[in-house]
Amino acid sequence: MDYSCHLSVSVFMLFAFFSFFPINAVARGGDRIPSQPGAMNHSKGYSTRRLFGVKEHPLTEEIIQGYMSNFELEKSMKEFGKRCANISYVYSIGESVQGFPLWVIEISDKPGQKEPEPSFKYIGNVHGDEPVGRELLMRLANWLCDNYMKDPLANLIVEKVHLHILPSMNPDGFALRKRGNANDIDLNRDFPDQFFPINDVESLRQPETRAIMNWLKREHFTASASLHGGALVANYPWDGSEDKRNKYYECPDDAAFQYMATVYSQSHHNMSLSKEFPEGITNGAFWYPIYGGMQDWNYIHGGCFEITLEISDIKWPKANELHALWEHNKKSMLNLVASLVKAGVHGRVFSGETGFPLPAYVVVEGINYTVRAGGIYGDYHRILAPRGSYKVIASMPGYQTKSTQIQINDEGVNLDFILTPEKSNNKLAKPKSCNCDCERSDQMELFPFFKTIPIELFLIVLFILLFLCYLFKRRTIFKFSRHNRQFIGAKRATVV
Image (cartoon, rainbow, N blue to C red; front, side, top):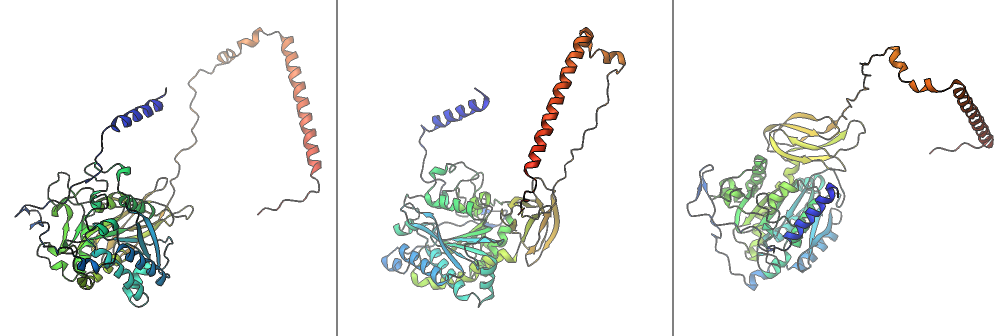
């Protein structure tokens, strides 16, 4: 049995051994833990948030009545698709535990088509008892439809971005009036985690989680935001820390994420005025660590810059407050999407030999993070904090790497790369010098056998070989002449 067979048998036996042990299929990753009173991160100088500091209204039928049910939301999205068919496309990315479709609205001047433009996604209702996001996202879609060709910001988003809106990631939790899904799993703790291998078995993911993961495999999202409730702050990676302690734990693109969070908070009616979170933003691990979160997974595995937006101090406010919440968040939601075009570096990568687009790798010197250009158009979109100088590098196996220095101020930079194929360094090998002694006496030693053959026998064999060669040559010439005579005067084939 060869090495590969031994390896296959070993892997199978190991898998069979571990399959006998039960795997916990619930509650992967803990909830955010309230920080201790007076806890302080001295590196940043402000205290962490105590959870559930705002008293929630008890859920009553009066409060619930003002929100769209799952079926009303589905109807509203389909009606939107018909009313705004010129700039929208409604599709499903999967189903919940109880079989309810996870509907998405795509908004673009070319919906459903691939373009070399950045894509942004909004996700609401990750937690079933935080429904404000689903209501605000439908208002966002309708505002874009109503103001396209009227408002410059609406025009920019529709024509330069592919915006995908998933109002409810957790329709079952909403219907059941609880945080988790129908299996009582917190979906924002159900993604594979970078620090702890708690969610690495794909078959144990919740269907809603798998739908999001597969969605990112199909779509090339540049950035994203999920809408939550229970606080008023823009939260950015990392969401967890390696030692599970409350501390500022920055990711490679910390500056870019701070910029995204600030775009939202500064555009908000009062988020940036927070006394609890300076500028209305916070690092997730510093606030309180979570594991298995969607935000970090998007950045690590999806190439997508995601932030988490807490948009309402109360998780389930009264329905008559929804209009005010929309007005407070409208400008922020629009500006965050528009920032994809207004900031960072964007471009395409081509082959200098064929002119075809290349799915190249784009990195920025000093930032340990790689962005992959799209396979169809070779387009890349790299979010970078403004007012900085960056060295952008494009590479592709088989091509020479190229780099250039750019300055990003208050507008995005367009930068295309044309990569030159690598030239082979393999040259014809020169004949090696002969180290042997090439005297005549040595050459004669190569043929000692012929000394023992009688000359008469040698001549007979040589004559027979010459005669056979003559017959073979004569037959070949005859066949060739016959073949040519068959096609004299035939019409020449047309080459298309």
